[in-house]
Length: 505
Image (cartoon, rainbow, N blue to C red):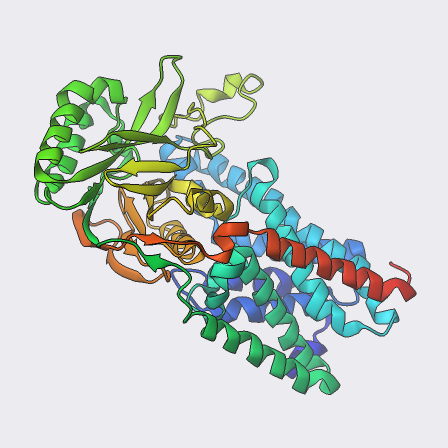
């Protein structure tokens, strides 16, 4: 890759967004994980020699390329299900991408401010192996929580099938991002600095080999006997699901698939499988179904909206059978499940014709769902992209359960991307993850993040497989993202110290 160091700065106006767009191919459904590292090395070269302002622009261009391609599916839900005209849906998608790309611009700006000082101080290598990983991870981390957070397409997710995945139970997704960015920096160093080539290649080899060795460690232990689970994927079109005359056919579709598998230890219906409030279907549906499940030795988990006595309503999970418990979604989707600043944008509310768009958040202190003799770490749809929220269910959770409805995004990249993130949650926490979705991808994922059984998208059926409960904790489930964020801050501080002999530009 000698061309890497001979790039004309003029080409970077095209190469920065192209590198971002190419990074999408490192994520599911493509899974070309080395490409994300190569693209980041290319982006780093484009930033070199640029001022803070120029580096900000090239950082923003990278982010615009990544998100403009990677989350273009946002327009599908806005256009087809929120009744926005195509031009308005595309406009809102572009505004969202432009705003999210600012995080990458900020990372670029910081690179542009610190890198020149490192060069003047004779520590150019530190820009590649300390500064690049640090600012990358801190930028992703900021995007993960600021203004409720949008931790979609974090670079670490691309490594779920790479040797680096062995680090996930220790460092989590932010740690994988750190190691992927470090790999990009070492790759750049091996190409650009002849004197450092051997050391950089040895470091790369050690980094990736250690990940493969770590994958062999069993961080958690089986607890009790495995049980059979049946995941119901009714494949109900979202355009029909919330129509009043579609309620009976929707319920019957789920019941038909359930009857075939009564006797399984666990049966799971997807998010809002019942498009009606719990109190409206309690007597005609839930109570008889619970009695039947109890008689057959099954536990059933159902996605259903639940209204409390104070008239607040929640996106909920209900477990029935030998016991009954509920879980309320805690991390809601802005503009999908609730409208921020509703008092200020009241006149626009009717424009967003999204069913059930005024949910309340659930109780932060209740991450568990009691399912018969087991506790499940519950998450609903978008919640499973937040690693530090999912880990809160451990060590009590015997397994993880996620119900989703990705039908809002059609036949786009979104369902495969979301499925990849779920796999990493299983690996981070050393727990099986049971994933039931309305239109796919439903699956049972083992404690190593491997897919045991899977039902493809847009197929109606019930997926059957074995679930092994586990006990114990991984290092990540104990301390979360504290270690990779702490490492990133330390690496950033180290670059500031190393560059102290050069004036920060």
